[in-house]
Image (tube, rainbow, N blue to C red):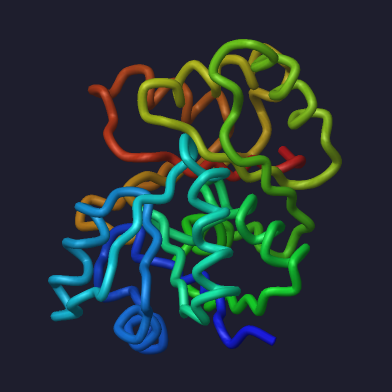
Amino acid sequence: MNKGILSIVPTPIGNLEDITVRGLKTLAKADIIACEDTRVTGTLLKHFNIVPKQLLSYHSHNESEITDRIIKYIVEGNKNIVLVSDAGTPGISDPGAFIIRECLNKGITITVLPGATALIPSVVMSGMAQEPFTFWGFAPHKKGRTQFLKKIVEHGCTSILYESPNRVAELLSTISELGSGEKRIFVIREISKMFEQYYTGSVDEVKEFLTQSSAPKGEFVIVLSNKV
């Protein structure tokens, strides 16, 4: 039986101090750290004086190929592999789900550390955490976008989704056009960073504010209530 393991370590989504002590210890002990961008992860490791044994580029374009290599490292080399994304928890709107499924299928030990994600802080800050909610990830950019949003507004629970700054106003306009302009919404950007900013009110109110504002920056988290 192999002694290798795959550890999923969340990394900060803004403030570097949000990483956990356990996360730092796991990174420091790793034989190989698989990461989306070695430069981004390298900056994080340098900040905490961690010298990695090896960094391995793992992203959406090479998932299948690198997954095979990682599994071989674990099974044949008994290596401890850590998987991180540029920010947040791998597998949530980031690469990671594929390698986790493959490792589960092969009986490889996996551990997932709790830690940074934009999802839960946003739901808590919205004041809607007591309501049942569904996480939808990113909306499609083009094909199927309207149908995707139609499914959300007709959904019976609070909905959480991610959106880029250049599409967020258009997304709220579509939600309004689908008959949900009066529903309660909470929108936050740059979460945990110095310029964290949030907006709350009806969909139409927040849409109007974002439309009139200068081009916003930073990834948005949108919490849409099913209620007015």
